Image (cartoon, rainbow, N blue to C red; front, side):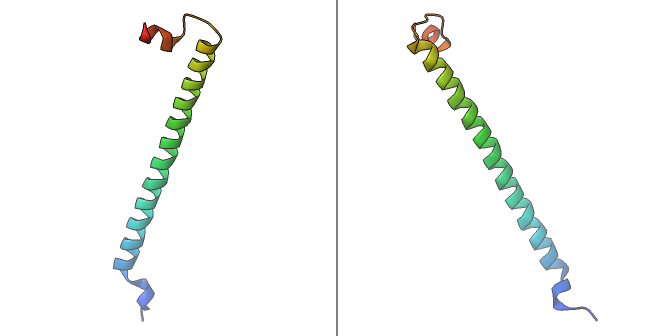
Length: 63
């Protein structure tokens, strides 16, 4: 005798939901890593520029 909890359609829906949630979490982590990298690069460029150097990457682009 099978119980109503053993419905294969419910199992498929739960797996699909879990995969969507996993994909969302992975996208958030990738976005966070990219954002942290962009902030670090911007901070390094600003530190270079504010220290008075003329060979900073941002200064070369604006000249």
